Length: 256
Length: 256
Image 1: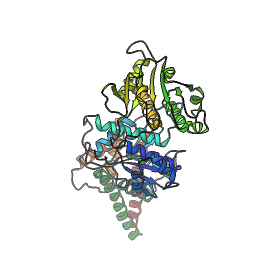
Image 2 (image 1 turned 180 degrees about the vertical axis):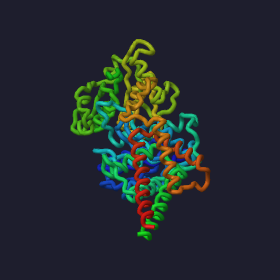
Image 3 (image 1 turned 60 degrees about the vertical axis):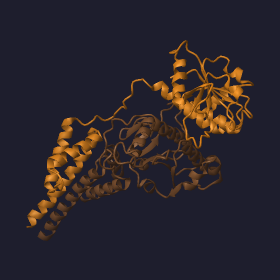
Image 4 (image 1 turned 120 degrees about the vertical axis):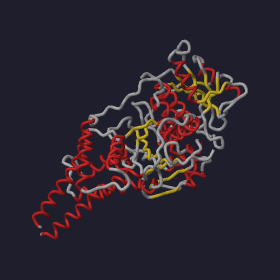
């Protein structure tokens, strides 16, 4: 069975042992695409020790400085979290998310695409800013009185569900997507464009700082899982606002 | 939720760190009955370190000299193994075994009884003699080219399946929403507003009629299931575009 295009992305991982344990967990379940964002120490003998035979995954791991780089070519982005619910994000249980990732990999919901699963730091998980890249949060059901899952354990559980999802699950009812999901880079450009336009028209949120507002908008639009065409429509609208304003501004300037 | 009568039995465990990691894995999933058969070193600081907050399980762990003593009061006995099939034993996948254990605990297949899940040594698993205590083997699906699951990982996966098995069939909890969903009327006003602004800035979709385009945008935004606040933010942006344009238009008008 060829490895599916499903990538595990470890962000700012503190302990090299955990990186090794994640590599082993992935290989156990037949996954191989590991990307490390800004690991504190890597390569490291403890990573190799804990990998215990999954050294090939460590050797093949790509190390990048930013999360954006890690997921640039991905379609769906799922962020692991201990939140069972969230007011802004769609939250999927690990089992549901794994099925979805396998469907994306097999092109059952649109053109086949790589899913990224993000794992945050041992202490704090993913930051709110990092979560903004995600289409949905991935939640592992656990004891509400003791939710502290080690990052390698979380990776093991999700990798296992991905393996199980390959066996079970008839191709099911999610309607096929004709157009690919917008990439994280597309989305970044969209948000930068929106921010520029809001700046130009002097939009100020009355209740929150500008960053918090853009965060809300990102979470909100990500929930819709926009495809390439939809992002193009939104950007077309933004461009229309800008060019009409510039024409108006030009008339005003020449008239005064 | 009271812990179910499901016991994890670690047999001849070599590394105390693994005992701690199993305790943590159990507590994460709401299990608490841990029995150690003839551990090489226990208690041990490394066990405590890896337990990371599940010290209560370690303190409560019963240490016994023989497997027979560990399981004397149990009903069903499941032995973890890396064998996918066996000529003599019934083999259950972890998911099936977890469902069965929960059914036993709840008295759904007979009087309620404790299930024991046995885990062997890190190097060799359970001996053939130890397997003889088992009603069935418990198999965790994995990559056939690399089946070497760490004992704590195996415990984590089975504990997780036990937790999942408790939820299966229970009514899904819909996440509480703090802010109400925007009403259809709110949404209509939003789309009318958007249409007016696009009209004002002269936005024209190049490929489709205006109606089809608004339909796309509606479907797209509806997918995100916007709440009242999110609709207000979008409308605030649209208003900002309009008032800046009107101010600009006014200046232009007075200047000409």
